Image (tube, rainbow, N blue to C red):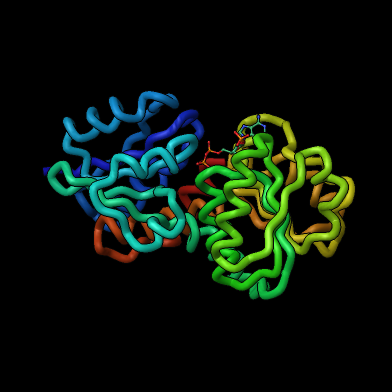
Length: 273
Ligand code: ATR
């Protein structure tokens, strides 16, 4: 029987996950298919029931459900437990097991560029589920400090406590001040959905320099406003599609037990832009 996988979130119409996973299934000749399913905030319980009814084999979780989804899991992988957010779920006859491939997917392109994170300072914009995975990733790489800039301060405060619990110094900046201080940081990471399908920028780029590394996890458009402006200031850029590919390859491995076909997935991804 054909196995079906999905990505759930809202908005979901921009998602490239169906294209890359279906390309990988096709490339390896595996009888599986992958769909996008929009579940608005507040409708997760109903959405999960629907997925179980169609005997979904597994699914990815994206904005805004990565943290809320934890409540619906019967089993939680170690990485996922530490992060407190899930992006990859396996369905075993109605029993859901959560994983998190965001953290390693996020670090992939940093490692590929041989960038050393140790003792560096990070300005992290956003405090949602993706941001949590990034904090764990940077903690693992032994950064010195993570400043969290977020629209909602309470959420940032929670993430600051979390970073501290992992042994990393952390403090808060509001979004408007983040633009003034960005130049002091080695890494500037956007983990909000700002920039997705629009020309908004989460923070001002005025203080970004050629010594900054700007990593935007938004991948649609490829050249977000943040990336475009940071490029003009000479910064090193890491693209959202690189993280997308990294996390997708790992999800694919968890679901199929096969090594994900990197080239087929990358070509499909870049062909879609
Ligand atoms: P995910 O779990 O995928 O990270 P999320 O938990 O909904 O998704 O987090 C989305 C992030 O984008 C949050 O940091 C959110 O800020 P709030 O904590 O204030 O909600 C941020 N975000 C979304 N829309 C935004 C906007 N228009 N302006 C500023 N920040 C925004």
